[in-house]
Amino acid sequence: MKLFVFVAFLAVLVTVVSAWTKEDHEIFDLVTALEVSEGKGTTFYSWLDVPSTATLVEINKAYRKKSMQLHPDKNPGVKGIHERFARLGVIATILKNPEERKRYDFFYKNGVPKWRGSGYYYARFRPGLGTVLVFLTILTSGLQYLVQTLNYKRDLMRIELAIRDARLAAWGPKMEPLQGKRKVKVNLGGGPRQDGDGNIIPGKMLDMVVEQDNVFILDPSGSLHLLDTSSATPAAISRTWFIELLISSIRKFSYSKESSGNDVDNEPSAPTVDRPDSPVSGASEGEEPRQAGYTAAVKAGGRRRKATRKR
Image (cartoon, rainbow, N blue to C red; front, side, top):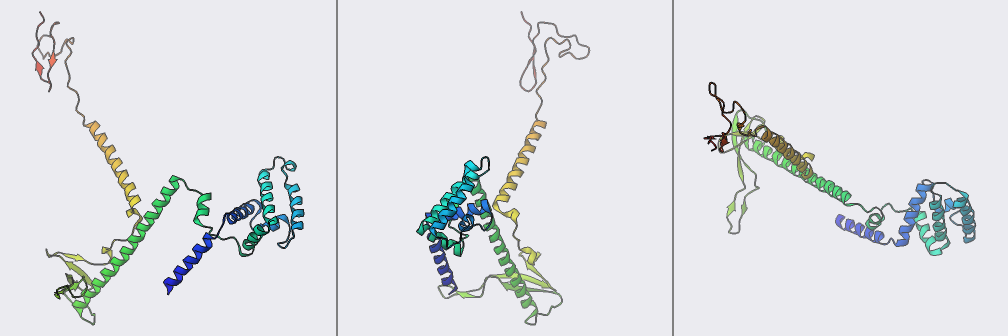
């Protein structure tokens, strides 16, 4: 029943939104611009200083009077006077037309709708690519955070249920704590069920140990792992995809910067080549310096090749 009412409400809302015409959107724009320019709550009638029941003659008279006050020639240098004067002409045209005035009177009595359709807002406030990307990033990150929250609550319920079942198996229906350790089996996969062949399939059983108020999971190696609500992973903004991507990029950039710095520090120095014109090149203590005409050559790896005399 509730679902039917909700669907019916959406259908009515879609019908109302789709009923707005181009003329309605023009009225919406004029009402918004008039309140911004002349003050909150200003209406077409109050701006012309006539009642909502004014006749066509009264509207024409009020329009002529107002147009003389707002004419740009009489208000030189006044900021926004051209826009106000043009707006006055559009408003007067609407009030002079019986059909358009009837449409305005509907919104005048019932109020301008806050939601005017997605097409109305998109046409007037069309977002750029950057705005769309930011919106999608926030939307997807928010949905991911919502999923994390739901999973966290589900895990908490499972942990609390497993702890209760373990204590029930160890202490009995009275749930009075007993001294010492008690090994129990807890069903985590639901009750026994039948497969297609009629065979009974037990639920997934897990070995646990209950000691006082503490409940431990017993793994095959004999190790005990405390089971409590801290075992569940809570939702965190830092684990949404965009923040994780941002953190990962920063870490990679820092790592590459450190690696490049270490490569520069560890770069081997080039082998030293003795110049032939150096008087002490290749000469050890007590030896005479090489004479001109000898050429020193160095092989790869820094080993020297025997010098040859030029003929």
